[in-house]
Image 1 (cartoon, rainbow, N blue to C red):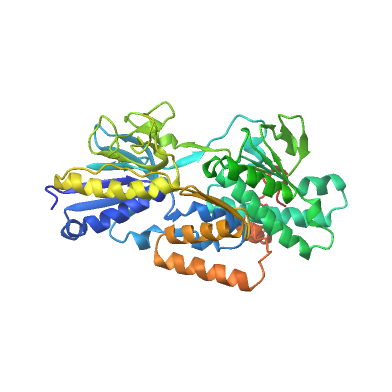
Image 2: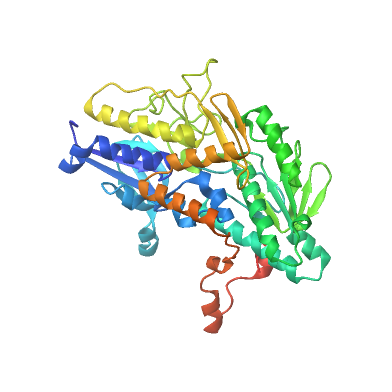
Length: 459
């Protein structure tokens, strides 16, 4: 049993935050029932997004609401606070929190005390000072961005189908993706697959009129699946008339023109930025030690180095890889490690509260799988290389087994079965992004959406 009453604060409701709290609920069940432990989660969103399913949600294979897991349902023994932690003073064991209520009440920042701290704020998109990127770029880290991008692509096809101006048509049908990692490759492949299918319902927008361009600064894409599978992915994409440009950078997208480092310029209304992530800026607002990349220095037991009562895992943590042959290597900031670290993290917090020895996180990276559209994929697992339908099937099986809760597993599987039996949905619901626009116009107000300033180019 826990010796003293403990207040556990979990910052972030993503992979690490949700799985750690879920583990603590199971390990500390008696203490939670008896009031000896209190678990509080502060998260900007009341749900966890299963990001590997975002490309399929963008392509319409999965409903957006099935890509997210409601935290209040899963973590019924925890206190959920929808808000943001703006700073942490670990020396005083307090976190500065803003919520929707504090904004309405105008009471400023609320100080939340704690005894044990779990830092799992995740990461944000790593951007560069490229002209026009902030005005015209589209991200791909949230379910809102995924659905917005799907609506945007179909809307561009509507524009191309309606206009008589060849310049507008060409720009509408040119889609530029920057970044050759998982997010960029899977998003491009799934959306190209979806757009190719959708084009059959447009009598004047054939698939060959669309330009899909992947820009990658290094000499390879999908490095996680190995060099050979990376080359296969490039050839597979190029076979589908996708323009893959390696050793190339985006230098500007001002005035809706994508200017590349190889000298090419593409008028486009779609620039999707997936060129990596960086740690949450919250980490810089703490008194905890950071490494040169801005991540928390951690031990193999997932404690923050040089401190007590502070824990971290996932994208925010630099965790030593004890299975690596070369010294000083850290675990990769990906979902595979995050989920497994969260389990060890939950166990270690329970051990610490009970005065028991801590466990060491040790997991050897087993490989990766990636989807390249319907019935197409690539995989490198336990040294075995798969491509095409087997890799795509493994991708679905693996992620179906990893998505949390039986409820979500059943719903995702049902949608996959239905999508295999019936035709794809090709509807753009762009009005969801501005639900009050129609009523404001009817009420005599000004349209809140100015098309001339729309970063996505939506009408």
